[in-house]
Image 1 (cartoon, rainbow, N blue to C red):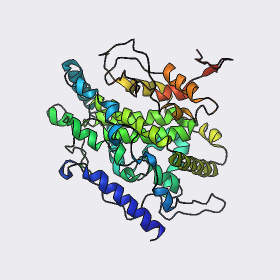
Image 2 (image 1 turned 45 degrees about the vertical axis):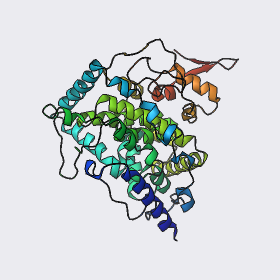
Image 3 (image 1 turned 30 degrees about the vertical axis):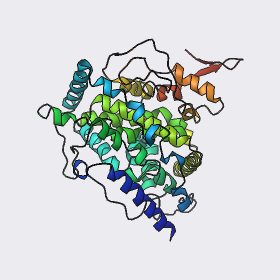
Image 4 (image 1 turned 135 degrees about the vertical axis):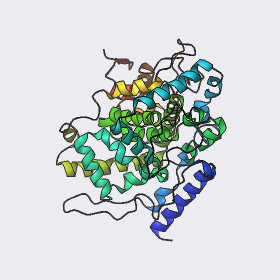
Length: 408
């Protein structure tokens, strides 16, 4: 069997497994691509890096294809939602917040179109939209490289929408949605949600609401990009959180859906990064991106980033605000932060010189407040409180005995 046919067969199996978990009538199903992402013929340029696709052996053999969490999915990360459904104050706030955000977007065509573009990314791929995080100049270079099929490794792992190899059934959220079976806001309050429709796509399918699959996808994608391109870490994370907020703009999800999607997406990214084979291939994708962008820009990535400005002037602030939206505490606000075991190595890109324990301490010191909805207080740790943007941007001091302290 040829290289491309083997890869195509693998993608088809992934697609079939994922789609079987979801009722066909409830979701707008994509078709399996004729060739897998990352196998397209690239445009070649004199003096440019030569794009090299992954081989068929790189489509298989990932231990992280099965979640490290119970049942091979991410249910335990967000299972406290079951209790929140019995809290009328939380659920009322959940509905009223999405109504307010959806209503505030009316008349703002730029924001609506941006939200629609992010909604299409589950099938079309996130790499183009989240390239914003690189800043205006590098984003153009990155999108040009994608258009010329010159980032095959990156596209295979992180592009192609549902067929990105770093995604897969375990991180699809299909099973979690069916377990919680929560109806979407435009179903619950149809007269209070404005539908921002488009002729080319049905954005208002009736699959279940919690957690947000789009947010989950945007989170694991931008988290992995933040890890392998740490110069842009907080920017990628902020852009991923914006994609989550766009689900509220569209009126298709509640804030708790988006928070839950961030949590499952972060846990999925940690599983992928802790998989030795996946980590090696993600690093190869990072090398591919750096070489391509530095060729197009004509200097180092750090210097290129200074030329066109940043995506956000306050990426940490944006990410932090979207961690809890307008909710107030529902639990013990004095609970200590327990860092999930899989999380500290997500800071390897930002702090390669530190130990696992020191990176865990940064996550603890930068964590969000305790007691917020979906915060878990058990020994497995709280994915809800992880503030990766603050952690990646942290300025630290290491004491002579190895203790980590935040500056300022």
